[in-house]
Image (cartoon, rainbow, N blue to C red; front, side, top):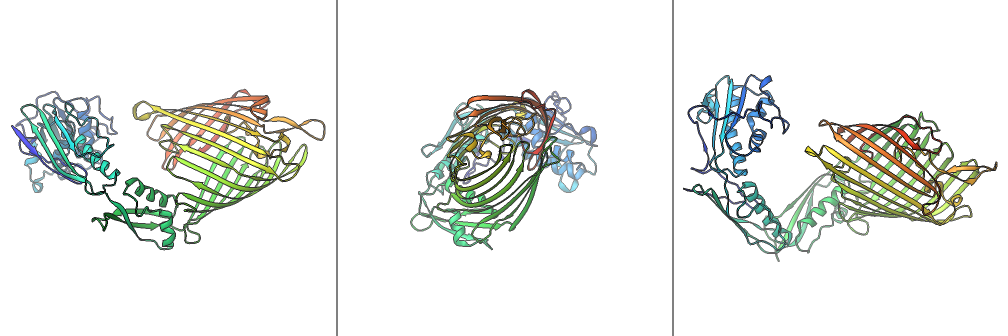
Length: 637
């Protein structure tokens, strides 16, 4: 016999139940086939649900005869009966409602696994749920049996979709001879429509679907016909919902490509630019239902503005460096054009071995400066550092531009005037300079605050010109790479590595601004050693000795293994190493240090809370180390 199922939507296929295809009926008595109850199944709990019978007045038993090993956990995962039992909704009315809903849900699982001749029985205390009227629900249900006989698996005799746009990638399993899963049919239709939209046919849709299941041969004949429609260009953008925002500036930030060929990626770029501005809490872009004059497509933009101001704070703790506190205040729309004012303040080394450090910074960002993807900014920052070997006071004023053409690529360039005063054993040294910091970041991580896979690359060059005899001219060069790889069930194990190198070229070490030099030791370089415990001693002091400063070159390496032991709790094992050189280009005398340790991670909505303990394992240039404790928010890198 042959049974027909036909349905069509704009981007997917919906398969409906047809007579003779799948039966939901009572077999007269509970199945005598071997039981696959959750208590005996090796798959129980794989999907976040265990056996709820022990704490429930309702005994819920799933029995699957035949099929592959993935079928039972898939049925339990979708079952409303399981959800009701887990949530304690076990009245007779609750059980009946869940059972009646489960016929369709289990049927969907069978279709998606390629089973089109299945039989589903769901009995409440021996009575088929499909035969109980909603108003006749029993007051109490003691035992629920879900019996599924999936029958034979169907394969494609034909898997056809046409016409298809050039470059369209269809699902690999949607082809003759493969298992006929409804999910693959839906994905093929979705991919076909998306392929036409990618080349400008915004109104592409599924025109017709014809799916025939032949029960004599266990084969499915699937044919999908697409209607591409005409190639369209972007029409006008209408905007709604803005309150404080200047509509002219809103349009400039959006960068809507009016007149260009329709491309869903360009529409997504509009959404990303508006989101990056930080002004809006909700952004909705809606394509017009109809085609405009000259094959154009208008788009409606509805925005909801966020609260104008925001206040935040953070902290980090080390048993040697003490407590660090940070705070910020933001105005998201300073001049009604999306300008963002941010004030940052920090106090560190509270209770540490050296004096307290202070910093105060102010920055104003203006999105859509020069281009829609370019943000202009001005900044001012002052700070005071009291370290073991020197005291530093500095002020920086600058203006710059940040270019973000995609989610992965960020480039930044700025022009800064800097003034520094350093007091150490050699006396007082003043530095005055112009700097041109330039950086590029390529971010391919899957999650910035808790990466499982991908990599992160950064490169930067900061040329500087001294404005007095004490300040030399040259450039600081920095590069850093991070890589992540996960494996195991649900990516339980993550291997992470980081390499960082830097050097200063041009001036002598005594002519180089002290914060351009490189130190090793502490949470950002080598855990287990004290903060900035490894430097060099080159600059002479007044007593005939030498002053301890950062070096002209550095290399640091970090390896970390992260293990997720529970949904929210993880462990970490790590080892760090660093070497600092006296001269540029990683030459001259050098010293090294290494540390290792372990930590605990607790997952929160804003990233993992990190608690690390580390100790030195080598080197250190006289640093006696001891156990170091680090607490912070987010992974170490």
